[in-house]
Picture 1 (cartoon, rainbow, N blue to C red):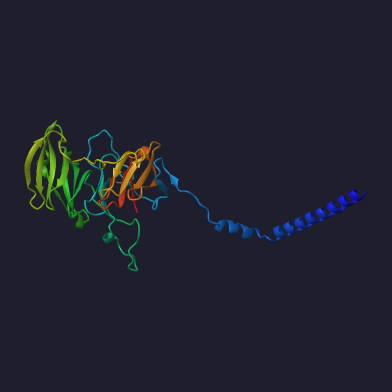
Picture 2: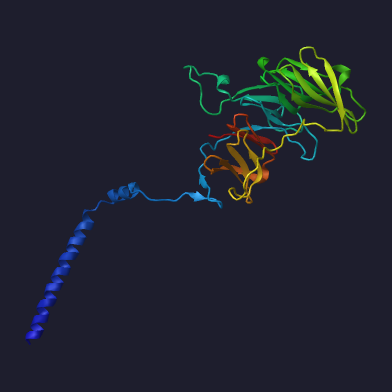
Length: 334
């Protein structure tokens, strides 16, 4: 009997302690504000490891994703054709062939120049220079430009191939940048543009200095003649005769350096910037990337690699132009 009484007392004490604990716990829940709890969770630091590629490179969000987009002419990929776009050799000045209607066109159009340099930007009404993509734009009209762009070393002149529509003859024009491309010189005027019975094909090779440019002109089914053209006098000086396309005109190859593939992901269409500080590439899933060489960090571009036809870096490695079938997107890489 005493044992039973003792057990009842013990059980009563335990029950009392449990009820008191429940009341304390319930009171603490009632005093907690749900908004405060949410805010606490938001400011509590968490450790989130960076996303890595297969080689352990850190994958970051691209600082600048919005491109400057323009419409360019379309060409057949297997057709011999001059370069549709080009950067100046020492300035962020870009030339490309745009459809005359700025909507769509085949093969030829207007030469358009975009000047991304700060000096070319027009101040607003308060005298402030706009930031970001706001290039100065100038263009030719009614010249049926095909490309093969070449800026003079001081980028004051732009050479390009064009079709004289009335005669169906190709020639090379050199337009003055300071006149907004309105003043130009025809290097093969009148009958000089007639070269052979097969074609009147022309191409721009390179500038020797600010007044002399090397060009090529067809002389047969598998023949081209190389000339030096003096812009001041219009005189053509014959240099040599080579097989068709036996020169570096029209060549716009990717810049690829020797690298250790153990430190890089598998890269298709790799193209290093002129100072080797960045590399553009497409992966096996057709995603496009930029790797920063100094840190091996990489950024994904909002571009489908299957649509990329050509990439071209500006001389200062600040911009990359990506050409598609009928448009060009220019990204500023920071």
